[in-house]
Amino acid sequence: MSIKIIEEPITALSAYGKVSIAFLVSCRLRIEPVAGGLGGFKLSEEKVEPPYIKDYDQNRDEGPTRWAKQWDISNWGVLSAFDEAQRVGGAVVAWNTPGVHMLEERVDLAVLWDIRVDPGYRAQGIGSQLFAKVVEWSRHHGCRLLKIETQNNNTGACRFYARQGCVLGGILRWAYPDLPEEVQMLWYKTL
Image (tube, rainbow, N blue to C red; front, side, top):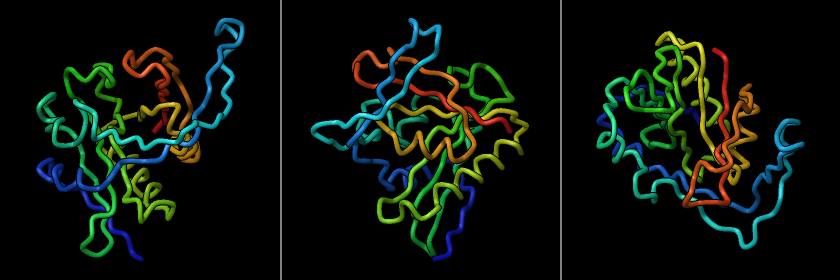
């Protein structure tokens, strides 16, 4: 299998979104403050019963075809992975976009907005190849820092970002009022 990763125009987001981002949640990271948070946080993995499927694209305001309705995405990068002619994954990088609070109004910060690999192609290194292209794209645009958001119920993503050299830099326990069991985890990679 020879995977080719190319940058596509923003108009490719509809095709990009056809690759499933859904995953099985069978465990999560329990986050417990130590000494009221002054001693940091203790993270421990716990089983989720019953397991369930999480699909970010099914959320009301999420999914690739909805982003342009909320923001000016003309500065964003769309990186797509192909096995021959078959789209098998992709990553979207947000950069220099007013109104995207994750970007903190900085032009030296990029956000890995979305990364996905077709379920039949997962655990074959495609995510790592995409991440390397995201880093390259971000550096090319003058960024010094890459920021990534995930949640405590996506333990696979947390392990993946740690393997890519990212550091957990923020935990927001009450970031999702409608999903009280989910905790926002912010990862960073110095470029």
